[in-house]
Length: 272
Image (cartoon, rainbow, N blue to C red):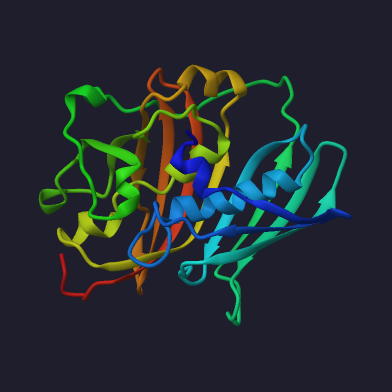
């Protein structure tokens, strides 16, 4: 039986030639959020189309997704184009359009590259936190949360938080080996930062998310379908927008990816 995440990303090739491609798909019902699919899955849908468009021997290095409007249920068209192809890198763009819409619902730019043997370093360390087996699960009341398990492990109480930094363990509920597309999806799982500031829930929407992928094939194989940790914080909020920064760590302490978001939110200035 196919994994629900793989089914959500299923694409049919409509056209593929001259460094461009066009695919068709169906909005995944299993991963619905308040308006349209969960943002991580929406970004993964674009990543999937871009990966099927790029050279097979190149890895996804980074992807930026802009969430312009919620997707409606039904069919969609995913179009991609390569803006530059070098010997070891390719620069692609893609968008998702639905019939009758005046503009795309989503757009993305992605860089694919050839990974080589070079000097390596990591700044910072994975935070010390209880193991996922010792943490209590949290399930948002949305369909997508049936398929992605979340266990906060640091600064877990938004109602008594003293900073926006917290950490959580996440994984696909139904075991699925981790890959670059899965990392793109899981990058969107941290609790919204503004909740830690206003100590309550408020209206918000991610408008842009970038994921930088660092994991080697060996790192991904080692992670398997186990829990990964997201350590997240915000730099500044105000004027209706805030940023979010997160690192994704394997249980063994390997830095797999880093991610940034810009989020639109609605909270009165008297909130504290």
